[in-house]
Image 1: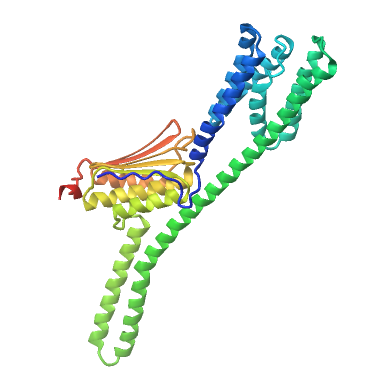
Image 2 (image 1 turned 60 degrees about the vertical axis):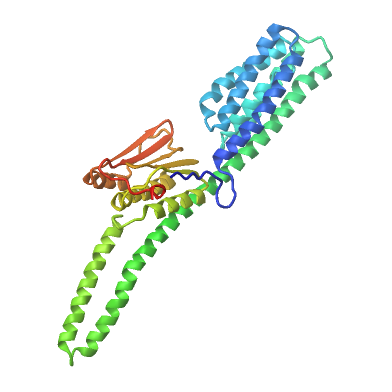
Length: 379
């Protein structure tokens, strides 16, 4: 039996990963086509094309990495390339469109400097204008025409591109803030569920204790044996409630794995995270209870500590594996809940592993001794 769930959030909102995919498919192809057309029109010989093509390739690399959220590593080297292509195009190949790569890479870098965008914009536009004005040193055409082609148009286009990129960056920041709020709300919902469980345990007990104590007060002078019986029941009831409360506090209360899977899916979707659940087999009640504890703790950790856009949960005959992206490059944080579960899983003949690699975080619990349950398809 297998079930897969991979969709938008419950409100139809787009996740960050979906937005990047949309940008990759709608922005990169038009920019590449425009760049190729400009090179084909502007280059009058093969060596002029050789001068212009590196700037186009560098710009497309930044766009592709930007859609993947990893442009910072290549942006500076690409900026050096496109910044060199512009003066070569102006002074060597008489290309007034050689600033195209700079038009893409420069605004991206400016948008990544929240506290210095204004001076960075002035520096970028000043560089474009200064290089364009240098065309007057080698050109025999009219001054006004050259100023328009190599100064006014490139500088104006660059300033406009910076404004659009900053607006787009702000849009992403709003999306990220919204996602963080949704994740916080999901954690609050989980806490409310815990509080509800605690209320179920203690609320009923306190109500019964109140009634039995009131009855004992009425009978204390008429039926002492009945009073003793009521007090014994109160003591037993309180002791049982203390045990249940401890189990709940340490995540040892019986959990239903199917309920936990559905709850985890709902929490992730509420946080705008795409989730896929592959249920290849069922396990027995004891194994399901332990797997449910691992899943609940991992779900909380992902919502609190990761910037996930995708989560995949795989349930097999021998255990469960949860993989999420957005783990970053920092060392694995001290996840106290999972550390406590590791010993409990080991006590039941299993192994809990946590692994972080290439921005992905994997949590896996394996129980070689757990016997698979009877699957519905086999009945």
